[in-house]
Length: 96
Image (cartoon, rainbow, N blue to C red; front, side):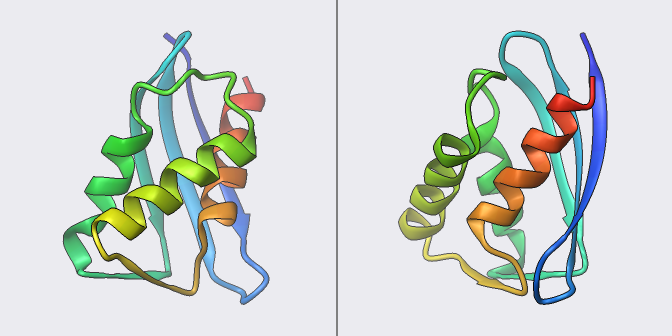
């Protein structure tokens, strides 16, 4: 199973880091960075929403899942947005 990492600087200057393990599906995902989510523990909810997705999913599909998880769980993102996280995930997968 391939593992990969990526870093992406959001326009606001915040950094999104991804650690990911995948085969045909995204198996394990860790989202890190110098941004904030409220409530703080909500990052795991976003990671779990993405795990199990097809590793070939495009940025828009990944971003939509993140947006849905954020709305469902009333997550406030500060310094990052779903598109930036999705871009960092695609960068990591595409680097392998």
